[in-house]
Image (cartoon, rainbow, N blue to C red; front, side, top):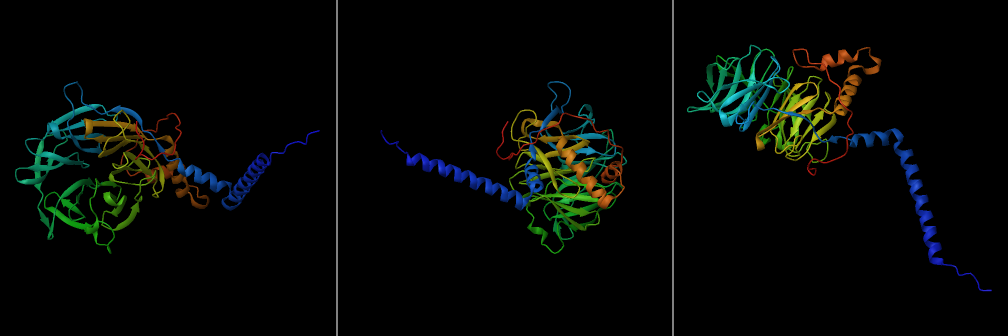
Length: 392
């Protein structure tokens, strides 16, 4: 009889596979013991931050020939429930309803050109930041577009040069102007001009280090200012007190690469338009990331160098861009709203507090009018994706 031939090479490979499996199993057990199942689930959930945008509709004027050319400013009038768009190419302001449907328009070219920003006050006056033959001005219009008066913007204030970047209006009607050149906020008294100012950022820091500030927003008694090149949102009280920041610089989901605009939704979500990553990054009232949506592309629901942001109602976000003259309404993802609501409940009800969800939502809402009811939509499945890499 022939002796059986033993393949020592195969036996060695099988033993190596068994040893490798045993080591993998041991590593998994040690990982669970070290981190715990709850921690692993939380880490996995934290990676589920980004989804493509859900397109709702375009914001356009009626007719085929009449189109918006170069939208350079956009503002949601929280006092009267209207969306205003500065159509620089046609020297006009176009007014839309919260749904995005066209309402009316008025010309601004004979009084102010090159509109850079728009803001409204509680009385219904519309302020357009732009230029005329004398230089930069802030022109005031009546609610129906009737031109009223203007305030020239000086080239210097308190010994420093002035270059107004954006506007915001408080609930009491006071207008705040962001001076991009000198990194400060100027309070405007309409009858007298600039009344006071405060530096942007921490008092002990040289605010001149900021290179580029975006479109600021106001929420209750707080100003939110994008520090574009630093990838963060600076928070200030209306008295100038620095309250901290939201977000950090980076290129991964949840980080800010080039934030150009910020708004706060009726349910308290801080939405930041990141032009560098072609998306909207969302934070809760405590500054924690709750998700993001968007991506680079030219089809509906995709963005190309977006620069304008507005939130007319709960669950809807308006994003504008000059490329293709596109202004589109997108849905705020349900998982973002759900995480924000959970965060609000945890913050509002510490240690078993009896505060209800309705009370928490009301406390975090900064708008002085009743928000529309939150509509339902299909659940979305968030995925991990970097918007620097995604394409339509």
